[in-house]
Length: 507
Image (cartoon, rainbow, N blue to C red; front, side, top):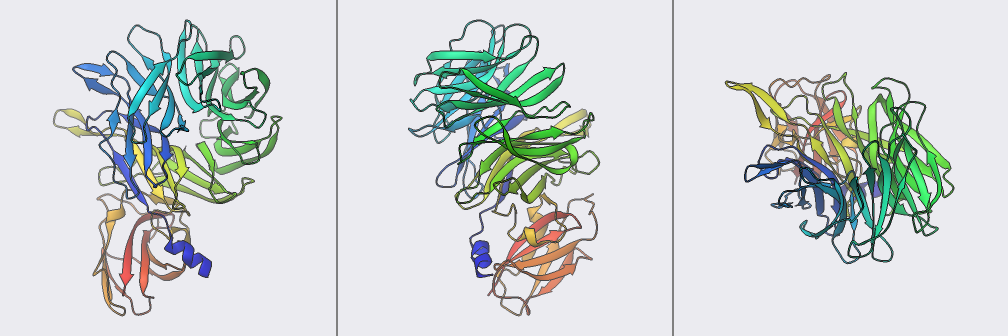
């Protein structure tokens, strides 16, 4: 219990942010996050914009979010006449000189797509970019890493005119192409989205490939230091498994992959999946998680200072109020689930808040930072349909238990956390003298429908439930006579969802 108390007292800072960074009502999606030593995070995103009456489909953009959830003014790369694209999930990686390398692409009207490397500072500015010199066709960059010799590797796809093949490119430190390979079968379609170094001096490369018409499988190949194929394997089912094999190097030299497995022909017949693959390409273990739905995990990491794994993605449950929700999953090193939490976007305007995560990283305080998208909102106005807000970047920071308010893991029946109703629960006076009473006020959005009876649960810093009561009105009095002094956490919840929380200090 002492150990649990120390853990609770050191709980990570938490927050939830949704923002249209440039205020232009243009769609923006976060594809990557890089957590820095001070706990701040560089969020990499893309989205359309208009510049001097010219529309651009995308720009490589970034924002720095600090440990309290405050964010910088942000950065957007504008190349006249060219749209610029970040790659895909987890498309950036650290440089040994500081800053980050980002794999992506460019496109100009009437021109081909060009695979591109972007050098990004720790504050998010693109300080240099290089369109790779590759012959003919369209070349799409999905992600990049720095090689041991100071050069770079970029993965993606090659479109020669019909179909497409997977692409791996090696450059020198300036982005000059040293070699490249395409991989795939004639008449089928393949692509890469992830690459990590391997113990033999080459690389694991992950993506997906079409094994028969419109049937895709997660795909991992193993190559030597020059990109020559050593071995390969498919890791899906007999059905259409769309998510790429998104890779992370494990401490034992194996590779961890996030994705999903389709268990039937229907769109709602998938489960989230993690698996480990050894140096021969054999599956060491494979685990499925969550209900049968349209679900996927897009990134997996090892938790620092632990053998545990943490993964992020989203699931789509059409039968419930929030059909698309972000997902975080913590497991043992063998993939056995420790906890799995869903995060539903909900605010005063949105009661069906589709949102999900594309990338995630552990933070120095023991928590986790997840990024992705929160969908937009249109409302009927006098002049027709009006956009209230656009699809936006979504950033959620939770503690080591996946909680927005510490102690949520102690709430019985809690499966989902609503992220944008933190202000729905207020407590006054706060602080309060021991033995005194506080008034708890509840202000849920109009039209909010509870799933079962509302309750208040109070937890203390030692990780214990110290009080519970039903909620029958919008205000209630809470006596502190039987509560311990110090920091307490209040949780408003219904039968399955954490709705809001607040801190209370008892002196």
